[in-house]
Image (cartoon, rainbow, N blue to C red; front, side, top):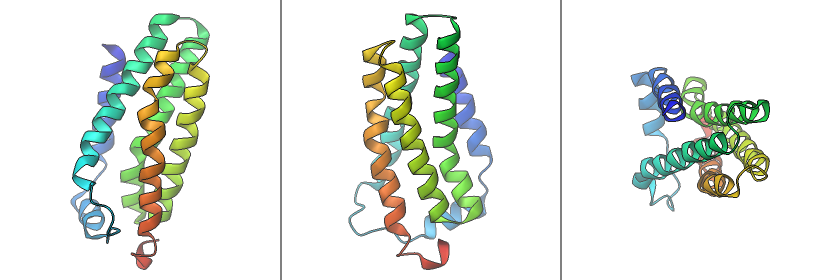
Length: 153
């Protein structure tokens, strides 16, 4: 319960940072013509976050309260913060490059987390797979938007 609650509160607090100007800027960006799945992106992220929270729960239950587990919980939180910072930081900076860098950073951290979790729980590591698979797609999409929006790099 605590892990899910923390994940939800971090996500909620993160969205408070967005203003209507930020959302307007993001919505007016030109997208690649092949981006036909944009309406599915919120569902994809819901799956990613549920799987991530479930992964963290399995790691906690495998070795509750020991220092290594606390470090891994901190790593989960760091990955979530980087992932969630993508939209508000990119929109505040009005820079697709910033979004691409944050997306790439999130992917690298997620991959490192997946490897770190493997010895504790292979199931928990597999539950990070949706993020590790989705993150490069989202990052590539942001990168592909840069030439389509040259004033927003």
